[in-house]
Length: 199
Ligand SMILES: O=C(O)[C@H](O)[C@@H](O)[C@H](O)[C@H](O)COP(=O)(O)O
Image (cartoon, rainbow, N blue to C red):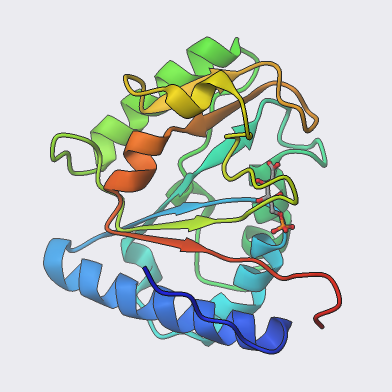
């Protein structure tokens, strides 16, 4: 595991972009595709800036969500909605909406989680767990990542790849999340955090 500490937000974006570029290049050379899982929070704006500066074949990217809130895409809480606004609709980067593997809305969390696991099975190489090329993770002030919250029973989930959660301590309560076995099976995981007081 490596930790890179930099001075400010711009340097975080530079470091993150370099990692994404290198991992995408290596994955496309190996598989002809790049499977990346993204999170919400400040990561979205880092990507909206950083991805405009990298050299990659965006047509080979497939983008998944490490977690998603179960709300309509137009709701400000929708992680896909934020990506759509900041990356797709602005055409800031050459990514198309259909490259994002979205979470089914308007169904129960259990059904949405099962459906998302089936989508993962369709696109991600299994060994025997799905092996994402890169997962970009955030971390909340309580230490949560994805929708895995400290002390929650989902931390012990070992069977499901994608789990429903209906009692998220951070609103909105209903979400789906990748589980630890899938996170740990990824080729590369990057936690990206900017602390208060840094620009
Ligand atoms: O659904 C959520 O609760 C958020 O997406 C969350 O997982 C986010 O990634 C962290 O809270 C880090 O947020 P920042 O990157 O803004 O610090």
